[in-house]
Image 1 (cartoon, rainbow, N blue to C red):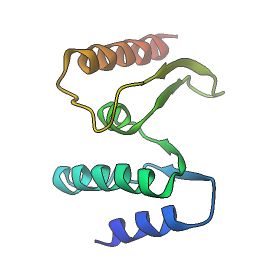
Image 2 (image 1 turned 90 degrees about the horizontal axis):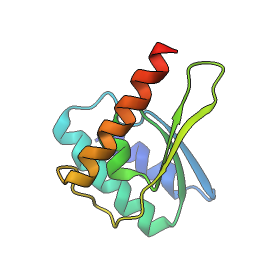
Image 3 (image 1 turned 180 degrees about the horizontal axis):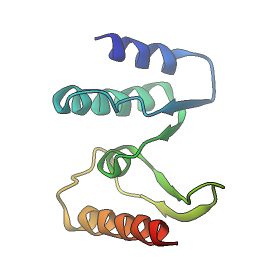
Image 4 (image 1 turned 90 degrees about the vertical axis):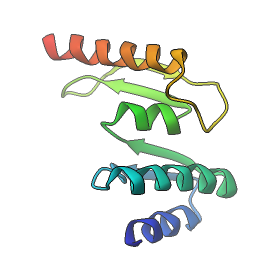
Length: 113
C-alpha cells in the first residue's frame, strides 16, 4: 500500500517529467502487476512523461513507449526501440517475445564487449 501511495503522490506533482528509478523492483509479482496497471492509468490520467529505469525487460515492454538499452559505464545508447502498439500490451504475443529476445541479445553482446 505504501508503494502505491508513493507512486500516486509522485505522479500528482506539477512536473512535466517524472523520474522513477526501479519503482517496482522490490515487490511481489501480484503487487507489481497491480502497480504496473495503476502506473499506466495514472500516466494516462495525468498526462505525464515518465522516465523509468528498470532492469525488467517485461516491465519495460509493458509500460514503455520507447526503450533505450544502455551500455556499461560510461553510459552510451546501444539500442533504441520504439513501441507503437496500444497499451496494455499482451507480452505473450509473438511480437513482444521477439522484442524481448532482441533486447536480451543486445544485452548479451554488451556483456561480451
